[in-house]
Amino acid sequence: MDLSVRDENLRELMDDADCDPQRLQATLRRFGIVNRMISGWDTVYRTRLRQILRSLPQPARVLDLGSGGGDVIDRLAHLSARDKLHVEWTGADPDPRAYEAAVARQIPGATFHCADADALLAGGEVFDVVISNHVLHHLSSSELMHFTAASRHLASTAVLHSDIARGRLAYGLFAIGITPLAPGTFLRTDGLRSIRRSYRPQELTHALGAPWSVSSPVPFRLLAEAPGRA
Ligand SMILES: C[S@@+](CC[C@H](N)C(=O)[O-])C[C@H]1O[C@@H](n2cnc3c(N)ncnc32)[C@H](O)[C@@H]1O
Image (cartoon, rainbow, N blue to C red; front, side, top):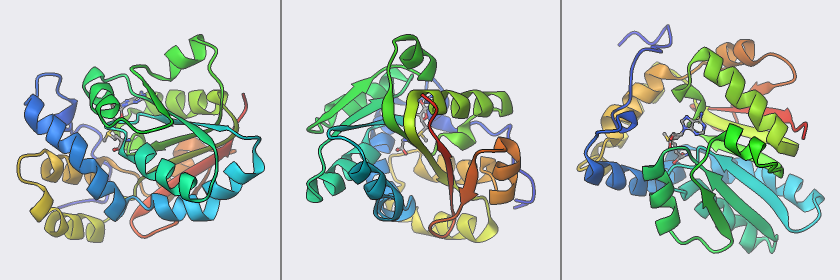
């Protein structure tokens, strides 16, 4: 597998509006385990988000843009509640199938919208912090610039976008590690395609430019951070 160049033309199976609905729902549900294993949000919470939330008037407002089945909010809501932080969590995803899966999770203190960033901006919404997980690699170059700029306009304090860092080791380990979780889902095919579509840190740094900074808080991951400008 040649991973030297991003494969921007690969489409993920779950992005097909006509994909098998049962497999899609199983994929969205199982994102919870996969994200706990690979996405590093516990580390991002401990090293960044918790400090930001503690510095804000309560309740702090956090938006997960492209929230899928809501599992990242579910985990972060659990972590912040353990730290006795009062946070209003909002998830937004333009895909109605993802929105329905997120609502079905019934996460206390969380609200979901079937909407993209433009709709939220048009509605005058403002949050303290905007986050995303596994959205950046989905986007075309122009969509990436639009999504990241819009995320800054929606956030008054900080933006944190987390994604996969493309690499051979990540690809090989994911191909093996996902095997027990993959049956009945799109996780294997879409996960490997996601890695092939993902950025390397220097590529994302170059694509986003100032004031974004891109780091790798845990192995095989990227975190793009910028101040909010709402
Ligand atoms: C791989 S899923 C990740 C879902 C979730 N964040 C997670 O990590 O489990 C990518 C999600 O991004 C959403 N998405 C794609 N383009 C988007 C955009 N321009 N704005 C907001 N969400 C978008 C898709 O609908 C999809 O639910």
